[in-house]
Length: 201
Image (cartoon, rainbow, N blue to C red; front, side):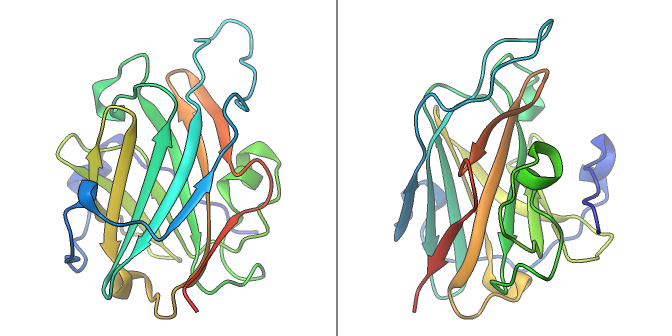
């Protein structure tokens, strides 16, 4: 089983740049797919750690001819990871672009939360930002991290990247997320079991 490699703190200085997606500005994008997540389904905190649990209420996906947009909506205010605040976010968003469970990495929900997402992950995005409007994405067995555009709202984050950069051509793929927070490796799994499936066919 191939496991994901973590984002080193200095990785932001070593990333490669992929194709620049076009289309509407990130926070103004249309999202054709919206997947709600139960409010209050966060994981209980272990003892002796920060008790706040970042809670996702929806994961939205939008497609244009050349771009993929993903928005994660939270029930309360969030901060960027680079701010190191009490409500700073951490975690991963995983994509199974060939819609095939038998290929790719295990999803973060499975690797760290022992919850089978029924995914074979080809690409994943770390939610640790570089402080300059980017997250980092790793594709397949590549040793390079690619920059991904991100915009933060008070209670949401929105990312976008080029479909060509991840080999996505048919608008059919699986997505899931593992959300963490300050001193909390996992606070919410999205969805709680399995995955969400985007199908533009």
